Every structure is written in structure tokens, then in C-alpha cells.
Image 1: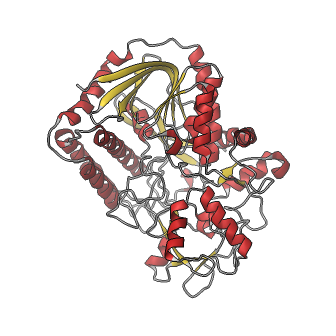
Image 2: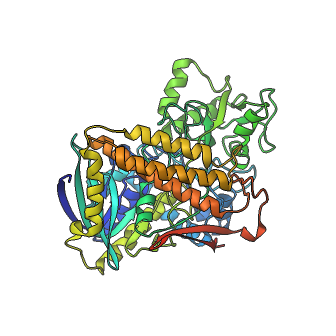
Image 3: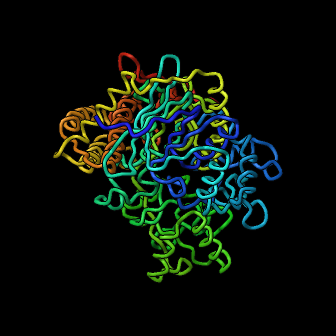
Length: 558
């Protein structure tokens, strides 16, 4: 058995030090709860918000008037889609509070002197994405969490939740600060899950041999979804998949920051919304017809080209500044090095591999079906506004978890519970082997299985025979992993734990995809080619019950 390096006690423990996790730490600590943040990397440079952001979904009353205006703008955007309206409204109602808070801390939410809403919008319609300079956001939020009294433990990814009868007893984590792996236990009354987007599930669309060349943070693999699932947590929308887009081969998100027009190679616009560059709206064609970047390659009319030609000098400078705010500094440096001038040169765009399948079901207070467990960020299944939602619900979750912990009894011996001992023994097996399969082999295998048998569209179809074959191969793979996976160092065990989570999420996704006996959006079934209107406005909900997976349907809250 690997050694336990230390045992910490807290009222609230937070898994993940991204935007949501750090905001939760500020709120929980300010509410008087002893708070520990466990971060896989380092909170100053981790997660999908590591380099910055420049769009923050929010409701500013003096700009939007009533809440419905901001809500409808978000629901009509790329991140709108299916989400519970009561959860969305709960986020929007407190978004102004968080925006003001961030601005007072030194994250510039008014970089042009006043509220500036740009991108992800239709011409002439209300806009809900605030343009801001998030280049320093992780540094600032880390400082605020520490100032509030939270304890941050970097290089310590969470491996498992540790439930106790009637509640939560804490988490099992891994210490990766040294070469030899060891465990860390945090005994806590409440747990906030904030580990971000599930990614690395599918083969990289642009560079299949480069596993980490993906649009979002490659270390964000949504481990909290798998950990939550293992102890009976409820998930929604897990049959879905989302494919972002951006420059081909150098996979970087941020397409709404590009102010140009998507064009065919002959120069004609791909969509009807924008014919000249617009910094106010960008070209929303990429949001409305998100598959266009793939469609044009398949039907031979592509590639899709981002054309910023005709934009004013000031607008081009504004765009390049905004890219820096969003953390695209490496891409900017590459363009400069290669002599690429976006005002004169078109940039070929492409659709990236699927990621961000839905996840944990929350209520408007970020609570889950497990007492004492809260969830925020991109791995939430019934809500999505990216960084804005993560920040606001981070604040709310910290308040709620602190309040819950104030009335809960501590668990003093959770490290000796049967579940904790079983899981520590499981991970220790991999670390104790002197030879065997690497985590990379495991990750590539699960990516290939899911890409071949369960990938969402476009230009990919599912069927019962394909999905069941994928489920069978995942079962085979589990047996091989248990028998052969070898992780002699802490870093390798960390990557292996990510891959184990990916394997769990792949199985969950396939089970839910089998349940969806219809074709809808990018979820196409060859054996059910029609859309069933009886399933409009419905989520697939799955729980790991005492007798195995329990799947049901529930209405999306309108």
C-alpha cells in the first residue's frame, strides 16, 4: 500500500483550483469555513482559464434592462442549448455581483472604460458576453483565496470521494510533488467538485498523434464526473458531445474573438449573418452552423476560411489585444514569427474533436443528489455559460457548502472506511508494478474505441451494434488495465487516474447513447434515423445504483 503522506481536516474541501474552485474557496473561507483547495497543477496557471479569457456571460441591468434579455441572448448562443432555466437564472441574477467583485480585485472588466459586450451575437440583437481582460485572472483569484484564509495544496489531484452514512467524509488525493507517489486524505464535511471539462476522450481531430494538442486544457479530464458517479451521483446529458472550432492544427479555442467573416475559398460568405468584419458580433455562423467547418471538408467545398480582410487598423489591433486577454499568446507569437497578418491572410478553421459531454446534475444552489456535495464549472450537466457560470456558481457553492458544513458532524476516521481502503489498495497496485502497460497506451486505446464506436457527429453515426461493441471493448480494456497498468512515478499514476476517469465516462456515454433511440443534433443513430418529438425538452439522467446503472428521462426545466 502506498503511504499516506498527510491527513488534513477541513469544513470544506474543493477538488480543482480553476475559476469555479477558487471562487468557491473565497466564498467558503469568507463565510467562516475552514477550506482546503486541492489542485492538480498550480492554481496560478491551471485549467481552461489558465491563460485568460475575454468573454464573460452575465446580466448587467443598466445594459440589458430585464433578465429575460440576457437570458435569451445566452440561450441563442453556442453555449445556450439545453439547460435548466432556473439554474441559468440563478447564475445570471448574481453575475453582476461577481463582475463588480472581480473588477475591484484587479481583473479589468471594463478594459475600454465601460461595459463592452462583443461576440457570440446576432447583428442588431442583444449581447450577453462581456468583453474583459482575463489575462491575470488566475493569479488574482489565487491571491484572493489565500487572503480569505483558504489553504491551497498544489500538485494534489483528487482521486476519489469518501462518503459516510448520510453525508460526505472527505476525499482521497494523490501527492505528486515528489517522484514517488503517496496519498493525501482531507477529512471534510462538504465537498465542492470543480475539475472542469471532460476532454481527451476522443482522438485529436487535427493531429491524431499528439494527444495534448486540443482546444481546451488537456489536463482537464472531468475526473469529478467519474468520482461522483462511482459513489452514486446523478448525471445528465451524458450521451451528448460538443465540438468546438478554431484554427486548424494549432488547436486553440477563442473563435468569437476573431472578428472576420467565414468564407468559402471563392470568397463568398458561408453564412448570412455577416458579410464584413464586425468586432461587435463576430460571425455567429460558426455558432449556429457549428458543423460547417467539417461539412465543407466532407462535401469538397472547403476549407472554411476566417477572413479579417477589410477590418480597420483599430479593429485588428483590438482583436489581437483580445486574443492576448484570452491567453492566445503562443498563437500570437507564432503568427508574428511566421509573418501572418490576419488583415491580409486568411486563416483556415476546422472543427476539433468532441469534448465536454455533459455531467453532474445540480440545483440552483449548486447542490447535487448527494448530501454535502456541490458542483460548479464546465463538468455540470444541466447548465453551461463557461467561465461566467463557473465564477458565479463558485461563489454560490462556497456559501452553500459553508452553511451545510456548519451543521454537519465531522468524520474522524474516514481514511479507514472500507471504500477508502479499497481505493487506496487499487491505486497502489499500479504503482507497485515494475513493468507493464503505460498510461499513454491506455489513453490512446480508450480514445480509439470511443472514436470508432461512439463518436458524436457530424459525419459520424451511432447504432446499437456499434455502441454495444464499444461497450464490450471497454470491458475488455478494464480487465487489461487492472492486470497490466504500471505507474511507478507519481506523475504517471496521476495520468493513469485521468485515463481511468475517461474510461468510466466513455462507458456512461455509451449506455446513455443506447437509451437515446432517435437522431437529434449531432447524435445520429442509423437504426433510429428520425427525431422523436416526444423526447423534446428531455434530459437522460443516469445514476450508479446498488444494482448497477439506472437510466431515466426527466424534463429540462423551462
